[in-house]
Image (cartoon, rainbow over all chains, first blue to last red; front, side):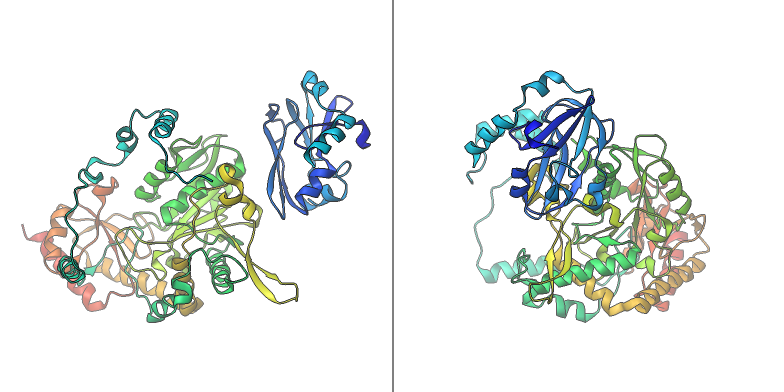
Length: 127
Length: 431
């Protein structure tokens, strides 16, 4: 995934639409803040998530953090590989380290999210 | 952080969220008789006077009874080494000693406690302990709900009625509901909770029920008498997913309300849904073996309101006593203790031909009988002769007025059993 083409949230998650399905992960910044990731708790398939609702939990050597649904939608797929290799998120946060996919997403909410330029600007304010 | 206790307005706000009109309404779950009505305490006393008063009160306790009381808590022998080792100040005076830099002894003890509990239950992992057996039953139920993402737990009739009440108390205000049943009777069932031996003493093999639960996407939670596992098929062997127990029988003296020990073990697949602390072995930077707490991200000091449990303080000192007790017994000692309890109970059964046996099949150290006379009357008569004959089942809603639950441990001698059987016969036939 090219980070320049993704949408972002203030919680340091990325999301991108591919053929009607929305792929979600966490950003390089989030990964650096968390440190080595040791476990990922994934949501149930078919579960409807409201925007801002807890979608997954990432445990790292430093903390346990929630991944929030960036938009409202239904869980279409989860990255089961993370069960065995949670540190895929550390190694490839924008690729093999994706976390979940949503379908039937609220597109308006999606369009409201930051693009990569706004996110980079946002990062300057939090660093 | 501000440590000012809740102000009146904050109290009012919290009460309105809960839906209670006043503090009194909030506390009305506590039976009236147990609520304090008067805080007008007497003047202070000198140490000497106070000591004399307390000793006078203590002397009113009769501790010489020969006890056949059970119902989850048993009169087992505790080797002197348990007291001697557990009262060492390194263990006894330490408070929350969990920093690995300065608490290797405690952490190693917890790690070894977890190891013996896992072996005892025949499951892969155990936590650092919980408050008591009833709390462990609730924690296992909540854990099953987290794992299955279902919210109904089925309580089997074998479950201790007091633990069942504790379960109901703990689930209040949560999405979890409790219903009676003997199997996974719906797609919303997270787990079936059984007890082996049952509250009234029945020993069963729940292997088929475990299979049935798994076929329905539910878990099997099994509460056990830990001493019975010296001779009885283990929860792991029966296919249980979570095993819990009251640990009092393993090195803790009988007390009115504890402190006791909640034992909880499970399979590795569920370890991240298991409440409470877990000690783990690791190596330090120089490759030396050491012990630390692990998987803490699930716990309340890190996850705050999203923690797996908010009552997961562990009973480190009680767990230590249980560890020492089990290490002293060893595999053969535990088996010998269990065999002694079983054979002595069987012997007593054979002497009670005047009472109707109520257990349909095998029992372990405890059995129920229907006496020819009201159980409370018989208990009163035998107390006068130095015996505590057992628990009246009617008081627990698990039997008629004549039903008595009798427990026998390795401590009862043949002479005591003979004398008790005779005294019971006399008490029943003397009108």
